[in-house]
Amino acid sequence: MPHHTSLIATIVAGLGLAFVFGAIANRLRLPVLVGYLLAGVLVGPFTPGYVADQELAPQLAEIGVILLMFGVGLHFSVKDLMAVRKIAIPGAIAQIAAATVMGLGLAVMLGWSVGAGLVFGLALSVASTVVLLRALQERRLVETDRGRIAVGWLIVEDLAMVLALVLLPAVAGLLGGAGPPPGAGGLAGAFALTLGKVAAFIAFMLIVGRRVIPWILHRIAHTGSRELFRLAVLAIALGVAFGSAALFGVSFALGAFFAGMIMAESELSQQAANETLPLRDAFAVLFFVSIGMLFDPMVLMREPLAVLATLAIIVVGKSLAALVIVLAFRRPMSVALTISASLAQIGEFSFILAGLGIGLKLLPPEGRDLILAGAILSILLNPLLFALLDRVLPKLIKRETAGDAPVAAAAQPHAVLIGYGRVGKLVAQGLKGRTPLVVIEDEIERVAELRAAGFEVVHGNAVKREVLVQAGVDKATHLFVAVPNPFESARIIEQARAANPQADIVARAYTEVDVALLTQMGASVTLIGEQEIARGMLLRAPRRAAAPTAH
Image (tube, rainbow, N blue to C red; front, side):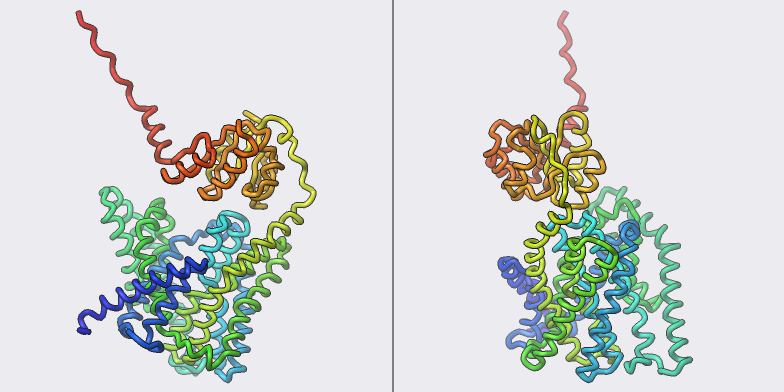
């Protein structure tokens, strides 16, 4: 194949195989991340057949790292972190320390150096942002107390890893790798210089970047060009990442993270996230493919015990540490189990740390193989852990909320609201005082919030017939289905219509296909956001002027 086509071949092979294996993984109800990693293994040098360009792939992966870290920064919320800081900050630090010690212990048993053990342990301590957020979003947990703690915990882990990426090169010489000489003066000087550069970069971003970046975004937004806005966001992300490395000597990852964090303060941050999501996803795929290319599958045959020990640290050791920490903060077992399951995997930061450890000659190649094997296997196992959790949690939560008062409104004509998210909260506030109301909500934190606000609540999932019966759906005059998942709404509406043919059922939808499905299941009215906005606009439109009278 001609050399000048190697970039195209690498991108086509990477994205094409990632699509095929990602689709297969999705069909098997596994994270698509597994498919991307396996696609990389297939085009890597350790398997027969086509081998992607070994020089271009890491550079494409570097762009993936920049955009991944930019995305992390874009979703970083100091406010959200501060809300759960009392458990997320000490909890994450303690869990990182516990996992690092376990990884160091395994590394020493394998005959590695202390420096290799520290890098190895750090890589095993941090969960994948992609995997964790996807698992929480699928279960509508992101906006719950459990979800906020998990995300806050993850943010602290990410910040700790960013700090590790910055400081590791400075201490590599002391740990036996390639870096400053291990003498006290050399190490102290290198350490101070590194921290000084980081401090200068952070100060520059907070003083200059905080003013310049939002100003650029607003000026471009006022042009009305969506294409220019998208290009501006990408130029800022890549430009700040490259500039931070060239001018301040800090990593691409830190530069991209701060670019996203500064941009997150703008009211245009959500639009910036939406506009760049396709490109971020595409390069994130190439990042995971390039990581898979580094994995030697034969490590599973050569070092089966080491692979199992690594997996045990990730899935059992780290999760138990998180469980104990959360319970120590006197949080319910349901919260502790959710956090434990969320953290029982490793991902993108682990790969970045492994690559840095190899580059600094701290981590042996077999260490990277064990990290990659542990990541792939833990990501495979994570959906199974959540499936077990989904079976256990309802009983736990029911026990934790034992002694709930009976629902008085269910014995008389009343309205039933299902879901107390962003839409449901507005509906509940509008109905308060107008009619007896029963709210069905499956998140314990929202249940507490509803009761504090004076609402009658049934705790449970409205898909279950017994929950609808408890809410008195047979006597309800109106049923408002405010859950965002159309398939879940369809099952709820079907059961409610069977129990009460006369009820007026109002549901929310996103597409015309959703409307058809929910109407078929028995919804009286199905509302789409775009239609309601248009209707509101038309209500304010001028009326047709009366025709002039002929004289």
